[in-house]
Image 1 (cartoon, rainbow, N blue to C red):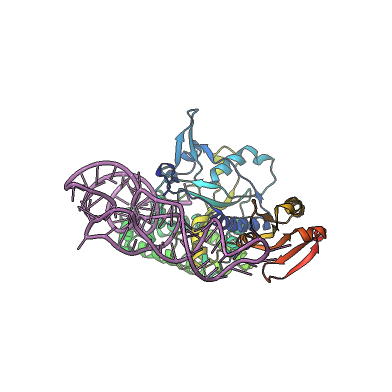
Image 2 (cartoon, rainbow, N blue to C red):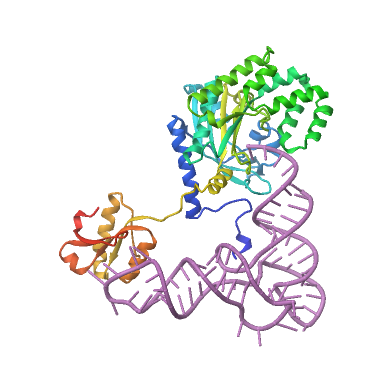
Length: 427
RNA sequence: GUGGGCGUAGCUCAGUUGGUUAGAGCGCCGGAUUGUGGUUCCGGAGGUCGCCGGUUCAAUUCCGGUCGUCCACCCCA
């Protein structure tokens, strides 16, 4: 047992090579997909002033901030999410950037709360945002990237889907049902946790806190249960406040269908999402089996930049964490087996070949090959054993006889076949 | 923040009805093999039985606390 005094902090992870490979596998896929869509990568500091979150993120995040006072008496916090940093960065420089701004990042984020399955005190999150475009094409583009990020890792429409909603549509629908404007926030809160509440308890909240009668609650439930825009249109489509909102969401779905991603999209008006700054279409990615937490969450946040003191620019984006995703990939057998690998392992027969072996190794490395050799004198058998263990594709044996003739023995470690080749022709 | 399960070697776990030097498999290191690996055989290192306290002649074992971890709740970026 390691000394407790120096133990890893709870909720934090070490990444020895095998775990690092898993993390790199995921992050490489994220980066490939974002680049494919023409997005540019950025980052910011992991430590920000506390105020950035207290004033802009909403109450729920603040209680879980990893914050402290630094040596300069500044109230600071490790970043719990990337969007406020993005807003701050763009508030400073968006005026000089061509729109729409299409940026992505893979920050390590922190929160101070008790760790459990799918939630640690630290995780890596893929953030993708479009800033400066208010149309649904931007919403759909961002959702498509999130979906492709998972497809790139081998997941299919059988594994996951996007649940889509729109706060403006939901607001209009609640208006038709008869929810008072000043009760909208309460209604959102109840809808947000409706899946976690027993039916009668939710109904009681709708009656007591939102002020609905039985008839209205029935209409609300039909609306929330709808998994198709046509179902919603059939019941509420005639309303003039609802129709344009419905039309916008139809366009959004049509864009994703045109891309061939229709199988990944389903309507779910229960998706509210906790963050105070969302203003339009919101979505979550979740596993079809329903065993895990949401994999990804995102949506439109048109007010945020202005609130941070920047240009009033519309924005849409998502955050997708590595922890839940990693669990899903592991469950589906989609984490590649970890293997060490070398192009060449160089075996010296005796100490006399040392200099020649070092020269050969370095020439090969200069040409981009992955090369290793024993760092101390060992028998040939031992060196071959090490070469096999380290995943060498080939071994180059440098011996006194061969060296005299200007050749080395190349041994293919898969077939076991050996041949002599001139030392200058290797690689 | 609340409730519960679990902490024995690097890993997965046995075991100790409280009693002298706590075991296995895998992994690691070395040898069999001083110019040929993956198999095999032999040997070795590695544990204050999570930590602190209590009961006892004696605690890794029983009790309490604490820390860690997992699960559920709360909350959710």
